[in-house]
Each structure stands twice: as C-alpha cells, then as structure tokens.
Amino acid sequence: MTVRDNWGWQARIGMFIVGNEAVPEAEWGAMAPEGVSVHAARVTAKSPWPLDGDLKRGAEQFAAMKLNAVVLGHTTSSLVGGKGWDEKMAADLAAIFGKQTFCTTNGLDMQAALKAQNVKRPFLVVPPWFGDDNVKAGLAYFAERGFPPAGALRYDPGPDWRDIPPGDLYKHGMGFAQQIEPLYAQIRAACPKDADGVLIGGTGFRCVGILEALERDLGRPVVSANQASLWHCLRRSGVHASVDGYGSLLRLP
Image (cartoon, rainbow, N blue to C red; front, side, top):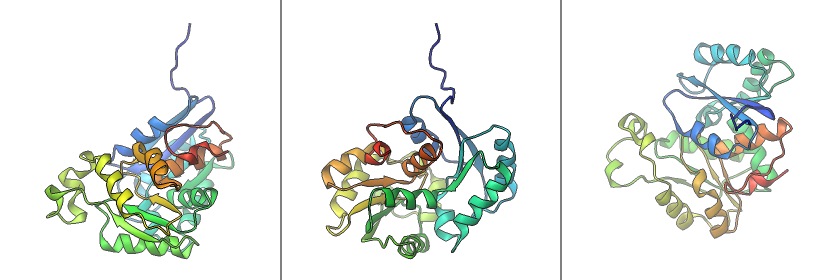
C-alpha cells in the first residue's frame, strides 16, 4: 500500500525566493493541492533582481526539472523594477526554460489575481520592512497598471520594533517573529469603505492564515502575494483544483 509522498504528478512549480525567508515555502506548502509539488531556489541580490548570479544559476538548475511553472517570488523587484521589468524577466526566463514552462513574476501574478477578482481599487497592505520609497513605489506600480489603490497600510509590528528602521527589521529577526492576529486587526480597522478589495504585498509577509477571515468580515476579496502566485501558476499549469481556507481566489477556476 502506498502513502502520500508529495510527488508533483499534477504539476511541479518552481519559485525563486529571498535567501533568508521561510514564509513563501511555508505558505505555499499550506495551500498547494494534492499532486502539486513546490520547489524553491534562493536568491541573494539587490532589487530589482538581475538575471545573473543566484537567479541565473537557479534557472539553469530548474530547467532540468521539467517544471510546469516558475515564478520570481519577489514583490519588491516587481515594484521597483520599472516599466516592463516584469514582462522582460518573464520572457528572459522563458528563453531558458522553453515553451513547456510558464514563467511569471509576483507582480504579474498579483495583477492577474486582482483582475480575476474584479478588484479595481485595492487597499494595499505592505510589511513593516518596506521603507517609504517602497510604499510609494507600490502605490505607483498598481495605479499605473489600472488598479489605483484606495489607500495603503504599512503593518505596525508593535512597540518592540518601532525604534528600528524598516530596512533593519529583518536582520533583527522580524521575519521570524511575525504574528498574523494583530495584522488581521489592523487591516480590518483601516480598510477604507471605498476599497473594493484588499491586496497584501510581500512574499515574505506572513498572512495567508487570515485571508478567509478578512474576506468574511470585510465582505470583499482579499489577495496576498503568495496566494496570487500559487493560483496563477496552478491555473496556467492546467490544475483547477479548488482549495478551501485561503481566500476565494483559490476557489476560482
């Protein structure tokens, strides 16, 4: 008799993630349906990520794995990469992987998810380690692509962290000290009435455990970075399984 071994018989998906983050693998592992395996390559590079070093080496290694889809799982690179960065990086990866692999970026995935959910004015929520420039870049990025945010919230992790500049939070352990209950409370309290959905950016930002509760209590779709990339990769890989518990996006065809 056999037991589940997490073999990707429906699809194998590769994701490039920040070298010192644990959230993307944890959240994808929680959400991925049976028969889908997720494989991570770690990248250490300045934003926006260039197609060299860790990224190029990981792409060449992934290419031998016959993946169905691969994603550049880095919100910041999409936000600060400038016009055309997402499309160029997806095309450059496709040149390495070939036609059998769908190549995308987290920015393209979030846009696809907002469109699928018919969200036109999202409330943008970003992690505490996003500096003012990144918040500004995020607002501009989505406005320029037809999704002008109704407002923005940079999550406040509490008094123990307030004296640390955003760019230093991760090296002080913020990435592994994240709590989703206060994040839920802040989003629920701050979401503007004219926002027709919520978008939580940042692939290293722990949040998928509150998506369902936020949708129920706000009465609006809630999209997160990792949820959007998983959904986009699944659907473009021909996997249409409905996943419960992590927001309505993963129940869309």
